Image 1: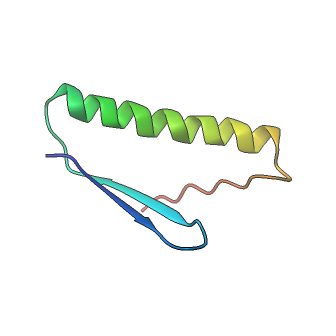
Image 2: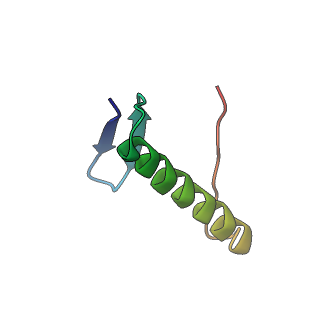
Length: 59
């Protein structure tokens, strides 16, 4: 099962965590959406470095 947990607070902070895996179209769709969003943010931060800073941490 794929589980998505979203945490928000009053100042607009949002944290999205995706956990788990399945052999289904749902898992593939979640992965595609999240990875596409991150790639778009990477490109946007390169285009507008004075307005957006993106940090990707590896564990």
